[in-house]
Image (cartoon, rainbow, N blue to C red; front, side):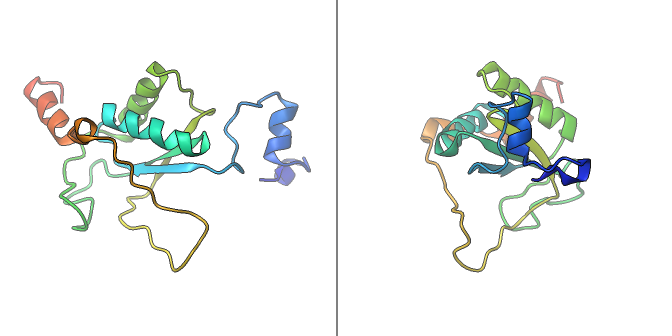
Length: 158
């Protein structure tokens, strides 16, 4: 990104260095994307984030806008996604809290971005990126946001 709109003819990297943001999120650096509903963000998501972060050192966490969606937010493409009780602020706060407890800082190792209710990622040929599924083991894969939501409802917290 060049800062011409503000009368500055310099890249975001040069601007960051000027203000001593050397450890700031670098928009030109290879970056891993995590896309999800995060209803809610849980320990398994944190472990996935840590694993993904090892690939490039920074990650963009994309939060699908599904709160209040009537019906299946996944449009029938995957398992039912009709249970989305957490709004965008609660989701983002949950992500920041969990990653902060692990020593990660938004704007350094990761950034959070709200996105539309993306239900498919399409591409036509080799486009310069890959899709990676991380096997985090049965203990992590067994963590279920559905079960967490059920427990929160039983406890009267949701």
